[in-house]
Image (cartoon, rainbow over all chains, first blue to last red; front, side, top):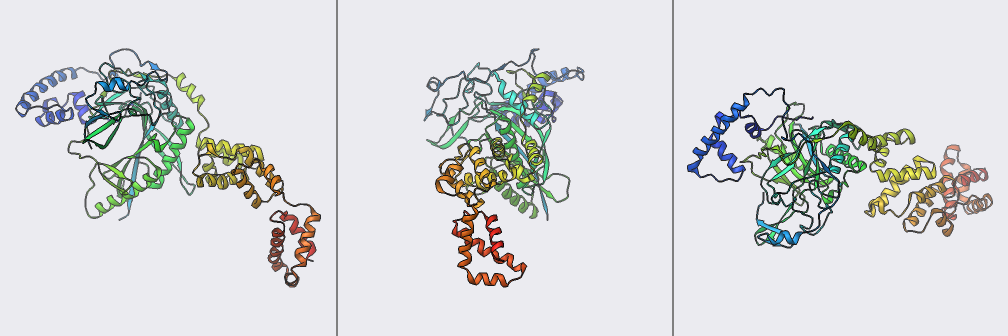
Length: 115
Length: 480
């Protein structure tokens, strides 16, 4: 199996738990923003504390020696079934767009986002 | 200061499948908005991805084409970010365990020299949809037809040193993937899009400078212009003692400039994790070997064979081997006329010239390889001169039939009848008393130059159809 470059900070953060003791309010604010979750200023301290507790549990798991264990990509002991390259879907735009809040010219309309 | 440009390219290649990578929706280009977006592509609750076998096969073929390590067990990951044309809130991609690992391939520059460019990796992923920002009452319109289209992201090492090399790399890549048949390589339809990572460093330095990434450049010409522009921008900043900000920039072809695209206050942080809806893809040696057997002769192999087998120069061989269709056409012409060098010349100069002028693809070329071979055969057997052949070629291009039919219909056959030629030579000599006198008075060296006048007159008299060698012989005999 090809394995490339170490994980960037946030993934390493989640997967390793190594930083768990050092989690700061700043980290929580950043993760909340990335996840588009609004946390009231008054609650940040509490959330930080709760996540710190969860990460402490992760730390316990980290104590297990896994140096000989291949990282698991999926809990099922199976591999991906492939489907043949065939078109099996037909156009159901009308049905899908019937439940959309706003459509025009066949497009879904969303609040304007320009990066 | 002398700056060295360091460039790495990320190419997003659309794979030529009928259906999407994780759903059975069609991938046809140019359909009405959202008519090719199924419940899976729209991220309706409970929908699960099922992987397209052909996407896997094409990725492995690419890996074999660049001699790369193949990921026998590869894993899909979720790349998380929010954007309206990404309905799931994540893109299914491959992060730590891609299907294609390190490889390399050769590029050839204009001067015929070659360089090897390293490929870091290539991985499978799905494309996002398209956002249209023109005014929908202050809102954006979203078309999800492209969402879920299979892409192979091909990441190069920072081995590229100039705009010319970048373009050569892309052309070689384009040639390779179309040979392999894994993509149509159509840049104007977005089948091959390119992100350019570019940084400068003082010539001779061995550490890398801070890079900027230029997104979504979609033609060879724009790649070249964007790199030139970005070089100037970065060099100006560095020479003024400034520092380069690591950021994503967008190339604006209309203004020929790059501009900052997104603020990096919150750095992109995609929080990759293994995609729980897909199991690892495991392929075995027999699968890979079967594909290896299917590999066609690749562009560089074909080029080398053209050099060896036909005695062509490296550059010519490279041009002819650029696409499979052109190479096949060329070889059909050689087979039909028996002379590779003349065939190479006609294909490159006349045929490609006409195609370029008419902005035509080889597929819609009005002159078949058989007809071009027929024309060359008439040059080789001295039925027509090279000059007349160009007229015949022009007529073939206009659809007037085979070379023989045109030569016959227009009476263009070269005059090789000695009696007929002799009377023409006599006529020219009789009408050129002064030149004859000059000729006879001249020494051997000068005579060689002066004889050109008589040849020219005979050719004119014969409307270009006299056999030039015979005319020369007759003149030599008569002008004693």
